[in-house]
Amino acid sequence: MCELTAILADGNKKEILMKDVIRLEVNGDEIVITGIFGDIMTVHGIIKSVDIAKQEVLIKE
Image (cartoon, rainbow, N blue to C red; front, top):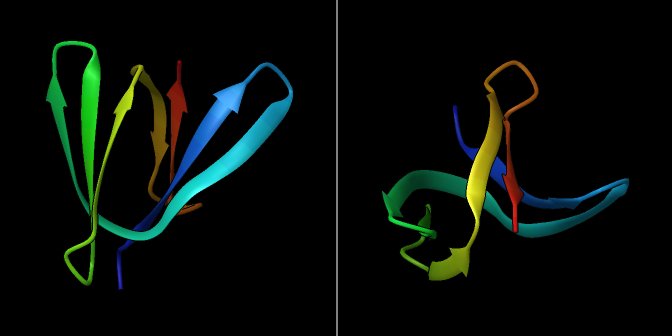
């Protein structure tokens, strides 16, 4: 499948926010992350990168 892992990247420190992400919605400085089972998380930040090969999205606060 093509689910992503949402990772909060702060310098060299990385924290997994959610696995099995199927949707990202950007609303200004907020990112709404939706998981495969319908779980939803909202974080403040910007999308730093999306790497489909690694199946991850890096979010910077």
